[in-house]
Length: 125
Image (cartoon, rainbow, N blue to C red; front, top):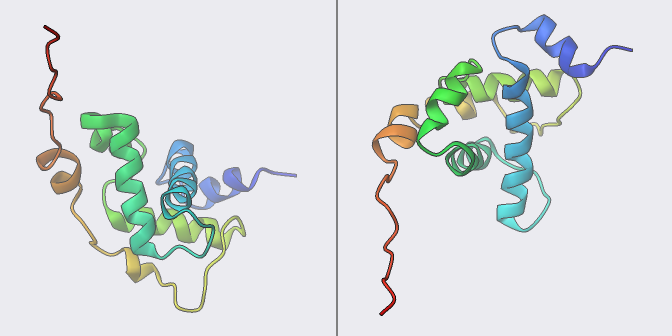
């Protein structure tokens, strides 16, 4: 039997396997941030994607996501709905792919707002 991820990628080769794994990891990350396992909205997942990408990849987050084909929040939505259509994730009647449309700009959240300042280090006397 073929791996569901292989089937998804065969139907929509725009995104690398790492993109699908990362979005699934972001779902787990979002549940952990909320301290409960419940249905996650598109907006909540996108906040989790942003947070996890910055934690894992820092100032390289946008470049890493782009290398996997993920360039906008719409791409995250396409990945989510590809996984839903493959039966890997589920959705409610209220969930729509439009929930992911232009929610934030990758340049704004991963480049312009990234704080590259070093943490304050206190010298010991």
